[in-house]
Image (cartoon, rainbow, N blue to C red; front, side, top):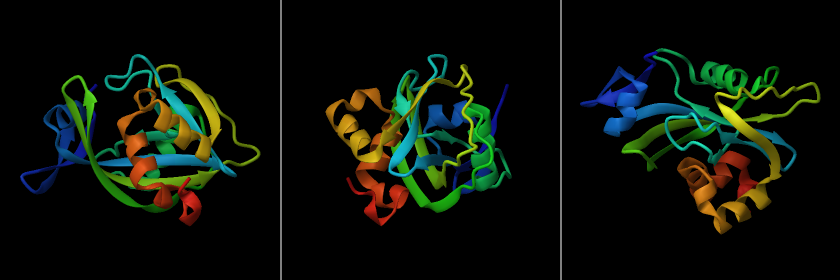
Length: 176
């Protein structure tokens, strides 16, 4: 199935096949969500069938909006698609841009809308095995220590978020 995402080609935003955008390293739109429970963040280990960074730990969810899809709509869609999470209200925290080699000849060059949502008491988790192989709640300071001690276990974008954008992701108190 071809998934068309918004990417800049020759300075113009165009619908581009997601795999093509990553193979060519094109700058494209993305969304990342961090679901929090106090100081704990929900992280996921990507399914082994993912076409890049399989088996690595990432933030709660991340994806690309479809062509003409609003970022918040995309965030809600992927929370449900990947983890079965509904009934949360994502709060837009800001935008970041990064470029990272994700292996297999692919590059993420993303303009990312960052969202944070608070877990609710009635929130359920139902990870989809084709997307997520494991989930866990971890204190954000502990996560920063784990990433520093063993960065190869984590996706490049999570390492970038924690290293360069913790204040944006977690608020002013975000720096471990």
